[in-house]
Image 1: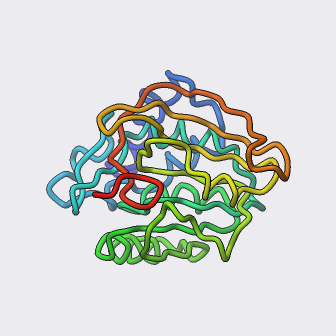
Image 2: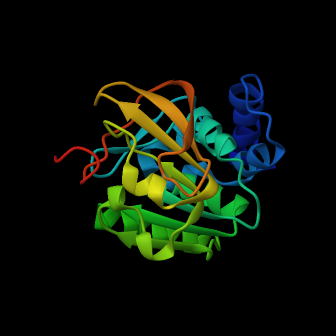
Length: 217
């Protein structure tokens, strides 16, 4: 067994199973996908630690537990289509791609999108479409989505994204101030986009979403 496989198994056993991550498919994805490929070369030895790490463009790769928590809350089925706002390193994208039928991911920084695309192709995740743009608008041409995940914080729940959910669809989004937020699960209950169920999943800290429904800079 290679060193990174051992590190992944230890990460799953000590950081995820000991908390509230119980979804077998999510645990398997976290155990399988090589997180160390998505971090800078100088940080590879820290790839499986219980904390976020910096990546290019002043962005971060989220703490493994937060990735697992958000993914578990999406309750993805293998037949579903999911929208990701903020491709970043591509690690969360890979987790989604292993669990869903199709992933659509929007990234504001072209260099990050290109780097993530390269790694995802290397890992044979061809069920992912990535485009560069303002993620707060979502991806209207491909809507509705069964699930949407936002990996950057917003000041309030983006109406654009709720409107792009299918009825019964789930949105996971960090909402709050720029330095601290609460993580929410929003479920669309009917054709009326204001008819939603809102659940709080706990406190979190994410980088800010820059865009129409986020911050301007």
